[in-house]
Amino acid sequence: MADIASPTAAKAADAVVTVAYQATPARPGKTADRATSLNAARGLNRAAATLAASVLADSAIEHYRGSFENRMMFVPLISSALNLAVSAHGIVDQRGRSHPVRNVIYTLAAATGVAGTGFHLYNIGKREGGLSWINLFFAAPVGAPAALALSGMLGFLSERLRDMPLGVAPRLLGLPAGRTVAAITGAGIAGTVGEVGLLHFRGSFHDPFMVLPVAAPPVAAALIAATALLPKTSPALRRTTRWWLRFTALLGFAGAGFHVYGVGRGMRGWRNWSQNLLNGPPIPAPPSFTGLAIAGLAALRLLGGDTDD
Image 1 (cartoon, helix red, strand yellow):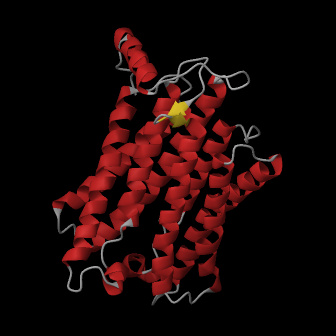
Image 2: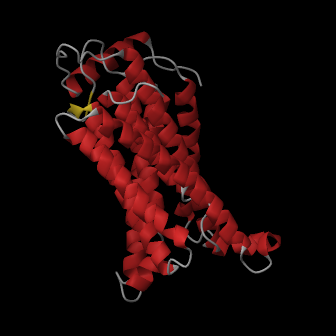
């Protein structure tokens, strides 16, 4: 992907970023480390890529099942595919500045996700009974477009981290960068748990393992919130948070495996994949936890609690 920004535009962008984020001189011991900020930015690119891949695959299956009745149903597929592509570019990009193409695509992805959430809420509301359990169970899921919005937002923040001037404490949206990313991660995990809890309740928690994704991730969300909000945290709390986030990341991949098994339990198993894949548990959905956990690990880097990843 060619760098289309001119040197003059790059200097202007640096000036705008400095003013927009109101960067202040760092206190002793809090000076922004370019390597740490860049590693955290690339971590957010990985988180955005994981969420985008999950949304792309999940939306493709669900919207195909809906026969693409509304032509707007193609938009999240295009947006998530572009988001995945620029996130992959960001992962390998070692430069300490943002890329204009990534900026635009991340912004559009976040906007698409917000708009998609609105469409899905409208879909629920227009059904007979409105906002009812039956419609929440079987109407368009709110979690998928919200995941696309999170993917775009995390990617956008990764670009802001790359633009932070040297010698200042990293800040995003006017707040310390680590706390900002931690807050978004915790909120994203909480929302994902709500969606999973709803759908697993629909399935009557017939498998004991279905309790895990509604029991373990909230602990990770609480730990990352505590690590970010407490004025002083012990090394033990930071280690616990780091390992619990890693467990949550693994849980996302394990969940995909369980869903593969669930699809295979349908009539005629994977020989009837064209039907069972559409009607069985969504295989691409659980890795959303993985993407959010990766974002949490990036937040820990910014908070100074993770230096060995």
